[in-house]
Amino acid sequence: MLRQMSYEMYNLYNDPHGLSWNLALYFVRPGYICAAYHECIWKRARIINVLSTNEVTVYCVDYGQCAQLTTKQLNFLHKRFMEQPAISMRGTLTDVYPLDYHWSANATLHFKRLVRQRDLYAIIKDTDLEERILFVNIFEISDFQHSISEQLISARLAGFSRNYSDETIKAHNGRRVRYIRERLPSFDMLEQQLFVADSDKYEEMFDNIVYNSQFYKHFVAPKLTNPFRYKLEEALANWLEKFKRRKELEMSSIS
Image 1 (cartoon, rainbow, N blue to C red):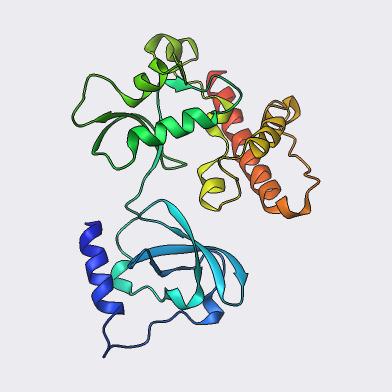
Image 2: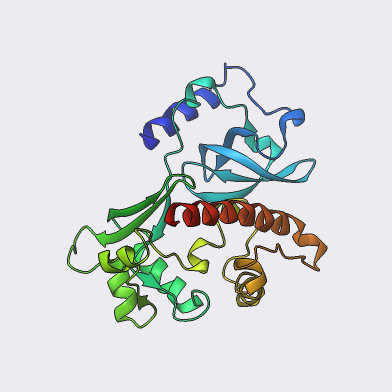
């Protein structure tokens, strides 16, 4: 499906006798859906940030990746490419938890080695329809006996989570307990590049926010001193409001 869409987009936008599809500057704004030329192919993308008059950051919705491009690499998206929902899905690995406050750099690196450039098979164990997240267990097609989660645990880079067991779910009134760092940073924050990945210093700063009892118990949004992180501050406040509503609904259903 993705290969066919890329082929059709290439033929449309690279037609030397066709119309000019270049995105007008008026539409170059955060949230606008367009076609972006990235890694030698055309992709459906959402503009995340406008960095200057000729440079933007986009999120490629079918690939789950961000890219920094020039405005000349953006085209209007033809209506025939608007019907298909995003092909890339949000996914969270199941049955594991980090051995520290957050995933270590070694655990992240080992995970990437296990999954990149490989044919994989995923079993969906749970879903979050509101946030459009699939909670999956991943296997290599050549090895159905040992999941990626089990390999991380064997390498002593992750702990085994019992939160997916029937006994634990039953003990919490039919709800699966989710760690705070399983919820944050949210996919919205990651897709908008509000979270700096692969930075221990940034991870520690984030830990200090989300593990603060004022944040996750009393729903008090943080006030960040760095003015360049105002978008992260807004995103955390918005997430906290949704999280609070969810907790209130859970408590009302229990009572």
